[in-house]
Length: 110
Length: 345
Image: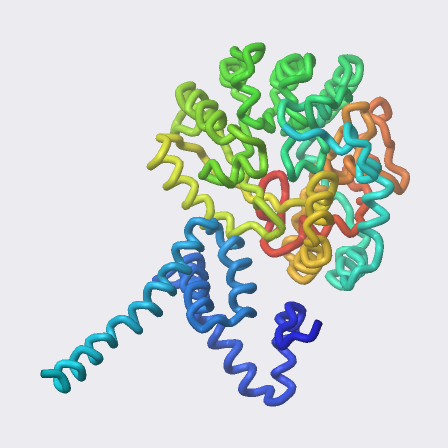
């Protein structure tokens, strides 16, 4: 079956460096720094990344950060709540624009 | 409760079959090659400080990740004669620690004798405890016995929630484990100043690596205290080894290749230098000698001229022996490393 996404491609991410080594190295360095322990723990950041992965619907990130969350000591209950956070923000972002709709409807309507 | 591989006549009950699978090239370099690149091959002992005795495969649980393939149906347990050979060998050395494991080691009729003898020799004794064994009616006085002899209890608890723990260890195990932990706490285990050490072991409930030991220890300490009033001293993370029932899980769920790649790609030379086989001697239920409990379950006794049975124990030849390795050893060298005492890097 033909498909755009192949799970094995996740492990080939570093091949992107072949197009521009310097930019890849700068990205990799920044990425590692972002996910290191800081004011937020590695676990908290992994859960945030999981939520964002569902927001942008990146299957590579969903795969990688599901594993990362488990490997940082999280569990299915926490990870499910993270997905719901993504859902609530995305849904909320649509819903709040309803205020604009109401503004326009209000202006046009008698 | 499930059955052991042996009871189900599974092909994986054969160590030879497991080794065949582990040795088949699968996209990762042979372990020996990675160790050679790290300057650690051939791997040698640095001197025995832990005398680990596996008193048998009998257990009151049938955990899904068990590398021993232990269970209530297993009848292989150490005899008194072999236990006496262990004590004779130990007495002729100054090895400071005796680490008693199984199965559920407490179910061996010679367990308490071994503890008393080892303590009589002034050695530190560890009991690898599954916690639920403390609640079996015939073992009602076991916790008191352990406390009286100042045995260090290292207890398995894969997570601080029932869903995850029970998924690995059986329905109801988490609730029983909490009862057992409270019983140990009441005796002083895990409390500052009592000298009664209670350490927990975290095993991932699935095909992934453990978290950083300190981070998960803090989580466990917080959650167990808050929800159950349970305290402990330290938590150790142990990586699941691709052996016996965990190997069965990996193969049945299509996780084997991915997990072995994960282990191999996470090879850490610093962790490799601190692997437990370098300071541990493992004695099997029948007296056969091994470099570690994992080699024991794969029927890989000590080799390269070292004596292979406890009756022939020779400290000089065993202290600096060359160690037998195979691809399952990637489990102990991945990431922060893994051992019976937790992370090694």
